[in-house]
Amino acid sequence: MSANEREHAREWFDKADTDLTSATLLAGIQGPPETICFLAQQGAEKYLKGYLAWRGVPFRKVHDLLEILNACRGEDDAFGHLETACRMLNPYSVEVRYPRYPFDCTREDASDALVRAEHIRDFVRERLENH
Image (cartoon, rainbow, N blue to C red; front, side, top):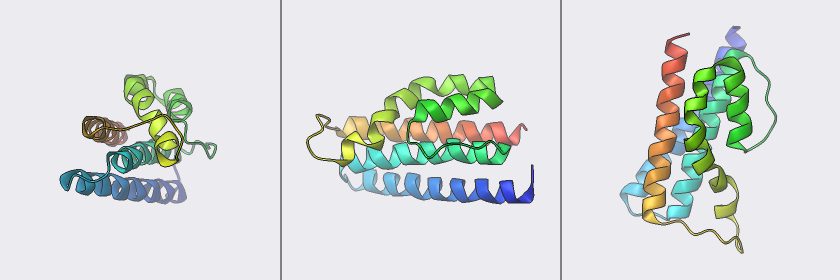
């Protein structure tokens, strides 16, 4: 892995951490659940993309966590462990951001989304430490 790939990955991880920190702060003040869910999805997405960048794997500009996860699984089968979390977070990339989508988020949804995104973050960090 080149220094450029490492730097690119760190940029993804920094953006992901900003999303997750923002989601955590909003959750702490009873912020809008839709925004918390969106930020949790974005943090998870950026951690997965950061992993791919770290490994030097090109990826499309896409928000579909399952597609991104499959690319990660191509590098490390252990990423299959994250499929349920990615499936749950996937709708929060688009549906919650626009009117007329039949998608309402509760505080429980927001809390669950944040826990799942943090799990993805922790998993990616662990995989990088082991490689």
